[in-house]
Length: 492
Image (cartoon, rainbow, N blue to C red; front, top):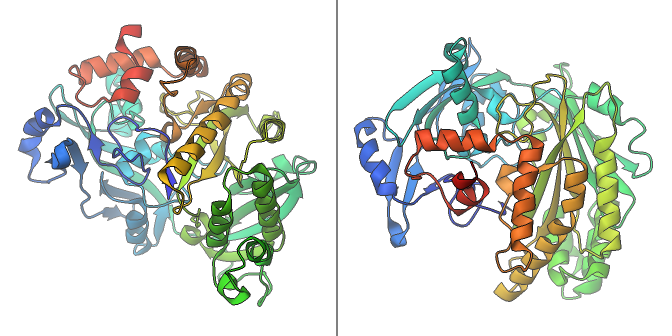
């Protein structure tokens, strides 16, 4: 399960797990009393268990409109449950993340994304939404209804990626697409050659994903396009009987002789990687060996397969993780700036120079622009393309609390070292992966100042966001420490 680095607005439980969308907020009971009058639909429930205050958004049955390619869902519905319901009608969501257990409200409020230069962040799927405002009122508005009304249009666009701080989303209508099967191809490039046909891939494939392997020259390239041939059954060109995990098994048997080959070969790729990293997660030489084994795994896994898009685009990300993901513009595809691959090459060098125990993969994706001003991929230019780059460290379950704290501190060091790169490429952190600087650091004030300046430099409308917060949530009911610190109303 992926673990975000921070609590985004009121969208997540105190664990920070991205899969949750219960809402933490001070004075939740005040809002609860106001919400009693909408109990006919029971969207929201107040709970003060363990002296915490929550508002939990519940799901309700999806309403599918196959003719208009729309689905209306409750804010608490998971992405996977919506996909399952849509399958019954021969439909699917236009785009979605590799992990599909997020709830729809949290998923859209932080501008989550899949991959594909023609596919924007998921907030662009919102056609209609119902929002409850602490300042008084329940408003339902849509793209079509808001056109021509500047106030409603701007509020609609700001609320689509509102970090849960502009109102409580209770219902969403999303655009969908006809269900499709995808033909996926996995190939291997090197860090020296991956840029050669880079823009051909971004232009010619619906979905493109790169997995860069620190301490190796390997880049796993995953591309896919819709498969329209009804005779092309769900197949794979990976040879039957092959064992791509053998490099990982061999390394495991070397460092953990208590395992035998039969036991190790019954484990999945992600299970083997978790066991290997668990052996010494902060030892650079060990992580280098694990990454080299993983690179060999991907080299032996090349080939193609055809399956439903839900199966192709979702995959097993492994155990509990710390993830830090950034987003920045690469201009239009016609420009061929190569900023995206240049960024990762500089990042790989930074890892080498600083002996960071950086696990695989560094995952890179692309999206079209978003028209929601708070989205990291916001732009007025419909031709603009954005890249998303995520780095990772794993938190093996057998590690002690102290060991996990040490991993967390090393990851903080890792992400702090990335700050000059972010500034150089005008990158901003994904809202679902952001956290405040460590307040016990002697450079806390400087780090926080730099973080705030980076938001404004990237074009995040901080002052406008704060004005909407004052108008819609004057008592700060929907706020928390992260939001109040990053968007300090005193700065506006």
